[in-house]
Length: 292
Image (cartoon, rainbow, N blue to C red; front, side, top):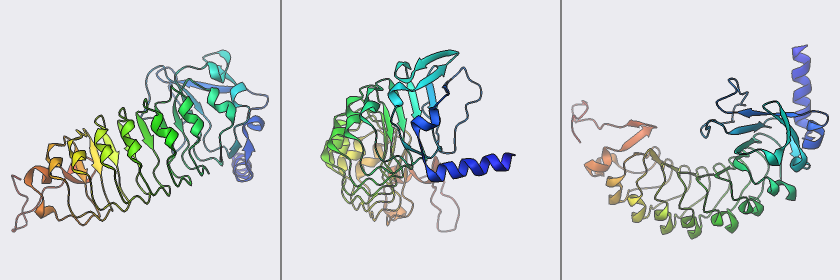
């Protein structure tokens, strides 16, 4: 019986299904962080943004093609039937579906905090998201994006922006408007130039520029006190700004052309090849150096 159900689920995902069809005749459950002990997250449904009391709607890996009707979606929240727009502090998971666009009614969901759209089929980030003033994080990893629209750079409240594994070629100077960002991931794209304005992102804790075509990092960016990690892996970089000596976190330079031996000791002490694992250079005798 279990095998039959799994085959039916796989067939449904391959063919695609609308949200209206999926939700017809049932109330979809809302999970509450800190109340529900077991929350059935899917493989790419991250829990990094969990905060006690936040609400979760899990719609990942359902083969969804459209979200028409989402503003009238009826849900069950701790034993009470509600409409989805009534749910406060909502994290909406829509990863691994077949969604290409968001309907106009989606932008009525003004209480969404984090929107996850990993591995869908978006060619562009919907400009209407800029009207959703409660949004703190948007995740578009693994879509078909070629640019970040200007409307995104008006979302000054954003704390997390992830657009990795797309085809983005340019990071506009307007990125400097997003001064509340603490997490920025634009890895696995086709970016060649980082604008000087990224130095305005002074609240960053984690930043990932890996797997692009970047040859130079602006000197001013070294003044950004990244607390956890900066990743510049697999870019044709040959040097780091001297100002990186002030950075509190680690710097991952795996796959670059940077010669570790040429870096000043203060920067060399921050270099890592794996998250949180600083590299300690070896002496000529093959022993680890006690001081850098």
